[in-house]
Length: 469
Image (cartoon, rainbow, N blue to C red):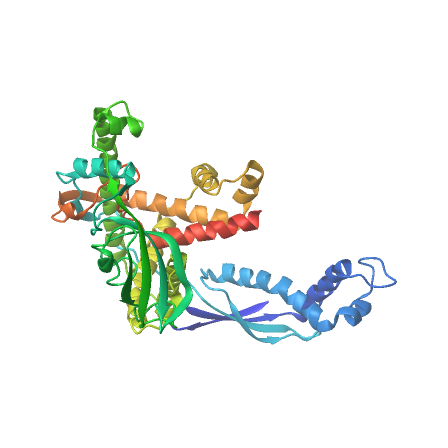
C-alpha cells in the first residue's frame, strides 16, 4: 500500500491511499463470501452461492460498499500507526476510485491533536484565596435545618401580606377571551416580588379569604407562548385561603425531629459538615488554580475548529438545561441577546480545550495509566445512580462508551492529583469569603467543578445504560 501525507493548516491532515489491485480483489471476494452467508439465495445453501450469483442478487455496488466498510478502517489505522498521527475527528473520505483489476484509490481528511510544549509543570507556585467559615455560618445552617421542618398553616381574620402563601382560583383572559390553559383551581403561590407575572403578587396584597377580584398583568415580550407575549391579561381571581409559614424553634425538639439526640449533637454534626464543605472548596480552588497555571505556561496553537466545536457543546448543554427547566430554547435562540451569549462562550470553550490538551500532554509525558481497580468505585457510583440490577451491571461495565467515560474521568482526576502534589500551594486570605453561602443538611453549596461537563457525562452515561440494556 502506498500512502502520501499532506498537511493543511495548523492541524488538518490529508492522507492519499493507493492499494494494490490484488489486495482489493481479495477483499472484494471476502465481502462476497460474507454476504453469501447472510443472504438467502434460492437454490443454494448459505455461503455456497458463487460470486456471479451473489453479484446478480445484491448488486456490485452493495458488495463494493461492504468491501470498503471492512477494508478502509484497517488501512487507515495502519497509516495512522505508521505516521504516528493522533486523530481527533472522524475522517472525511473523498475521491474514491474502486474498479476491480485496478488499484483502490481514496483520500482521508481529518484533524490531529495539536502539539503541546509543556512548561515547567512540576514547579508551579500558586496563592489560593482560602475559603473560611463566616461568623454566622452555624446560625445560618441551623436556620436551614429549621426551614426543612417548617409548615404552612392557615390564618384567618387578616388581609394578605407579602411573604404569605395563598391558595386561589383564577381565569385568565386576553383580548376578552379565556386563553388556552388559562384556568386553574386551588393554585398555591408565595406572594413575593417576581412570582408569576410582573406586578401580579402585589395586587393580591390586602385581600381577604373568599374575596373575588380582578388583577391585570402583562406577559413579558419574551414569554414562550408567542400568541400572548407582550399582551395585557385580565385575571378573575377568587382567593380561597391565606397560609403562613411557621418555622420551629432551634432547640432539642428540632434536633430530635431530624434524627439527633439533642441540639448539641446536631450542632456537632453541622460543624463537621461545614468544615468538610470548606475543605472541599479549598481543595477544589487549589486544583483549579494549579491546572490553570500549568495550562498557561504551556505552548500550543489551538485551531479555531476545536474551540468552535467545544463552544457548540457548551451551547447544547445550555439548551438541555433550559429545556429540562421547561424554558423555550427556540424563543431564546431568536432573541437578540442570543448571539452575545454564544460569543461569550468562546473564551470558556478555548480554556476548556487548552486544559484538555495540556492535561493530555502531561498524561503522556508522565506515562500515567489507570487500572480496572481504580475504575471500580466509579462504576459502583454509576450503578447506584441508575439503580442497576446485577445482570445489568455486567453489561453496563462492558459497554465501550461507559468504559471510555469512566477512564477519562479517573485519568483526569489522577493527572490533576499528580500536578497538585508537585505544586507549591500557599493559602492566602480571601476577602470574598463572606459571599459564600455555606449550608448544611441538604441545602446547596458551591463546588469548583465544571457542572456543564458533569451534566454532559451524566447524559452520556444514560445513553450508555440504554445501549447496555
